[in-house]
Each structure stands twice: as C-alpha cells, then as structure tokens.
Amino acid sequence: MSESTIIVIFGASGDLTRRKLIPALYSLYLKKRMPDTFAIVGISRSPLSDDDFRAQVESGVQNFAASKYDPARWAEFAPRITYRPADLGSVEGMRQLDDYLQQLEGDNGSCNRLYYLAIAPRLYEIAINNLGAANMISEDHGWRHVVIEKPFGHNLASAEQLNTAIHKVLHESQIYRIDHYLGKETVQNLLVFRFANALFEPVWNRNYIDHVQITAAEKVDVGHRAGYYDGIGVVRDMMQNHMMQLLTLVAMEPPASFEANALRNEKVKVLSAIQPITPETAVQHTVRGQYRGYRNAEGVVPNSETATYAAIRFYIDNWRWQGVPFYLRSGKALAEKSSEITIFFKRPPHIMFPLPADTQLAANFLSICVQPDEGIHFSFQAKVPDTAAEMRSVDMTFHYNDTFGPTAIPEAYERLLFDALKGDASLFTRGDAIELSWRLIDPILAAWESEAAPPLATYEPGSWGPKEADDFISHDGFMWTQGCCDE
Ligand SMILES: NC(=O)c1ccc[n+]([C@@H]2O[C@H](COP(=O)([O-])OP(=O)(O)OC[C@H]3O[C@@H](n4cnc5c(N)ncnc54)[C@H](OP(=O)(O)O)[C@@H]3O)[C@@H](O)[C@H]2O)c1
Image (tube, rainbow, N blue to C red):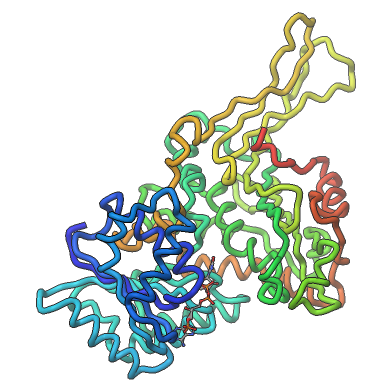
C-alpha cells in the first residue's frame, strides 16, 4: 500500500489491543503488508508515556504472537507507535488528538486514517459523535474508516438506534463492523469451496441436502467473564453474530462478483428469507440450557436464567432451501472446543445390496471445520474388503496444517485489519444484515424472558449439552455431530 496512513486505536490500554490488534499489525508489518508510511496512535485515559505503552504492547506480542517476535524487527516497528492519554467523551480532547494527528501527517497532502474502536459498546456512539464534532471524519485529505467492535447492539432496537446515530456522522462505506469469525481462513474458504468448485453447487440444495448443523462449542466455562456474560448469554454472544454469518455463507446464492456489496447483498437475501421464530413457536424451535455450577460463578446472580447453551432450528423460505432444517447449536463448558458446519446429504433412495430389509445406509456428510482442526472432511460409504457387501463410513480429509503448514493460517484480526486498511468491506457486516439478524433473534430472546419460556435445561460441564437438545434433534430423526472434525 503506497499511501500514508495513521491507525488510531481507541481503547489502547485494553485487552483487545494488547492481545490481538498490535500483534496483528506487527505481523502485517513483518509481511510487508502495511502502508509504506504508517503510524499507530494509542488512545485511552490511562496516563501512559509512549515508552510505557510500547512496553505494554511489546509484552502482548511476546505472549500472544511469540513465534513472530523478533527483537530486531520489533525495534524497527516500535518507534511508529505513540500514545496519547485522552477521554473520547470530550470534544476538546478529540480536537487535541486531531492537532496531534495533523502534526504527524505534516504538510504532505493526503493521509488516511483508520479509527479502531476497541472500547466498550456503550462508548461507540459518543466516540463517533465526537470524531464528527471535531471534524475528524471528513475525507478531504484521505479516507477515514472506522472499525467497530462487537457486540453491535444488544437487541434490534439498540442496533437500529446505533445504526441511525452513526449514519448521522459516517457514510456506510466508512463503517467496518467486525465479526472476527469472518476473518478466519476456514470461513472465507467456504466461498471458495462452494463457488470455485463445480462439483458441489449442483447438489447444494433441498434436493440433495437433508439438513445442516452449525456448531460452535466451547470447552471453557464463563470463567472470569461471568459478570459480563450473565444477562447476555449464548444467543447474543455467539448466535446473533458469528453463527448467523456462517448460516448465510452456507445458504447464500452465488454472488456475481467477489465484491463487498455483491457478497453482502446475497447474505441479506438469506437473512430476509429465514422463517421468523415467534414467541409462540420458540418452544417448538429452540432449546435453552445452563451448565451445572454456572450460578456459583462470581458475578452471576444466584437464580440467573441466562442460557449458556442454545439449540435453534431455522428454516429458509426459498426455492433452494425450502423444508431443510438448519440447526444452530452453541454452548460453554461443553466436551470439546469445536466450530464446524456439517452438511448432511440425503440417503440413497434404493438399496440394491443384499442387506437385511430394515438396513439404513449412513448418510454422506461434509464437515467444514472452522476451528480448531481447520479443514474439510467428507464421509462416504466404502465396501469392507473380503465381505459380500458390508459397508462402513470412511473419511476423505483435507487439513490446512498438512497442506499449507502449521503457521499458514493467520489470526483473523490480521486479515480484517488488512482489509479495513485496503478499504475492502467484504468480511465486515453491513448495517442492514445486523438488523435483520437481530430481527430473527429478538423474538427468541423475548420468548425466553417471558412467562411462556421453554424450561431452562441443565447439563453437566464437559458433556455435549442437555438431554433436551438431543431429544429436540432426534425428534426430527437426526443426531448431533460430536466434534467429528477431529477424527
Ligand atoms: N478482548 C477481547 O478479546 C475481545 C474480543 C472480542 C470483542 N471485544 C470487544 O472489543 C472491545 C474492547 O474490549 P477489551 O476487552 O479490550 O476491553 P477493556 O480491556 O475493558 O478495554 C477498554 C479500553 O477502553 C478504554 N476507555 C474506557 N473509557 C474510555 C474513555 N472515556 N476514553 C478513552 N478510552 C476509554 C480503557 O482505557 P482507560 O480506562 O485507560 O481509559 C481501555 O483501554 C469491546 O467492545 C469488546 O466487546 C474484545
């Protein structure tokens, strides 16, 4: 990238900056993917000097990107980082920041700015308002992009209100709403897998696909995040954003081009076609659970009804997907950490082999493993040697690790920062998609908080979730996958 750019990180003394943002920028620097001329300016209220801040973020790189840390390369990179203590709630503070940024930019014409809001969600609106009030959004001397962290709203009304507020200051093309799942290679590979191979698209529909399972299982419990998590729960934390995005990538029509709005238009069409779950049908289409012991965690109210596990069945009302259930499942304190999408194909319509009359052949399935074992598995039937017609499910696999090497997959934030610097919003969520997603999730949450809420099922930590969730899917004639990506 040949232009000058300043990356301003609001929330510089926080966890995200140290663990993810600076390690990602440093990695981009090592790969020569940063703009030719760049500076990184950290902003938060803590009274740190430039050196204090550099030491803080250097330890972040040493701890969270240890294999990349090279003292000599860090010494080249670090002088580009400075820190200014400021309160983003003060317009005067913003004006002083702008003066400082102008000093850094000098008189050399245009210089771009990327503002990264690594701050609590309640501060997004005030930060953007004050950037506007201090005239720091105008694009007369280079582009101005604003990256907004998740969560974006805590329900439909708050997401709409935030969109309305920020659109008063920013054009949609300047806004980069992060969903870090979209920065994962395996998620991006879904598009390549579907649309760069002629083999799969013809069977990617209701004629061949029986059902789809999307799982985001976490082995860890809420831990020290209990206070933040209680009242938010698994649906807001994982489903409204990451899992709905995965669903759109599985279900979308082929976009005409690999361009941000073409991609995002197709995602919006999927979200618009999902059959809404109403407060009345929530009992039928959802299961909510809480792991045993959750209420004892520090920061959790004693009789908390917060769901740490959820299973939801969605249907998409269009020609491609009519009648095909999409099951979303996520939980904490489960048996394994595993995020995967499994596409189950229909069974053969007729068995010509000499097998007992009640034999059911296992269905073919395709597992796209998002993490931690990044890759793809395809399960199909093979004849057991030296038998008449005995069959067994066997696995065809692709592992990123084996093909591209153990260090080939970059951190999601690296890709997302690179794209925000290039001005490519393909992997960021557009305002209408966020609202549509909340529109689907809101009635479920409302039902769960109402008198008619489905019972809160309990499950053992280390299990695969509540028995009620097994009954939920087996009632439809299916079974949950159990971390099949590891096989
Ligand atoms: N941490 C993660 O792994 C992670 C993952 C996904 C999403 N996120 C999202 O990223 C955002 C930041 O998370 P975090 O974990 O880094 O939070 P954090 O550790 O609490 O950091 C918040 C930062 O905001 C600064 N801040 C607070 N009030 C301010 C003000 N008025 N003016 C200027 N700076 C102010 C704080 O510094 P001072 O107190 O010094 O001002 C601190 O640097 C959140 O929206 C979170 O949801 C974080």
